[in-house]
Amino acid sequence: MFSKAVDALKSDKKVRTVIVRSEVPGIFCAGADLKERVKMNSSEVGPFVSKIRAVINEIANLPVPTIAAIDGFALGGGLELALACDIRVAASSAKMGLVETKMAIIPGGGGTQRLPRAIGMSLAKELIFSARVLDGQEAKAVGLISHVLEQNQEGDAAYKKALDLAREFLPQGPVALRVAKLAINQGMETISTKDRLEGLLAFKEKRSPRYKGE
Image (spheres, rainbow, N blue to C red):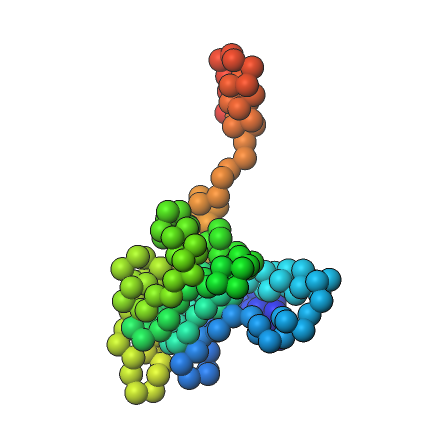
């Protein structure tokens, strides 16, 4: 259902910003259903994890700005889903963590790549190695989220902040936002060029590189 919803968003030109939220009070996404996982045989686990990773990547690859509104628990795959969004906002009472190592597994939905990009490699390793869970204030302090709000009586403080941000984005040129997102995302990736390969080859062969600007 989630994958189909994201597919529909991809091709809808009227969509300018996407907010990912939960309508379950106190929970953004608690991650994979471990009781379900226990019942799976080894041949089922691989495809299951691959499907989760694919859906999370679909969120990351949406061309418009995406905001995760974290009003409750975001654990394991739940935090990986939030990490795939461009911006994260959370209530101070929210709890966030990649807790997989507690169960002798590792984050399988992109968390090992996206958490270091969000908060730095050393701190990401510390959080994953310890399976530590952070509240909203702690998450803001390490740069995991952009904004932290005191939770309101309705339990949707993060969602309301996400709406405010979306309203800030809406007046801007939609094509410019898409291109800006693409430029920022590609700039964070290692760019493969012929000159890069030539530099590595020259080092290996102990000679001066002959760069061609390609």
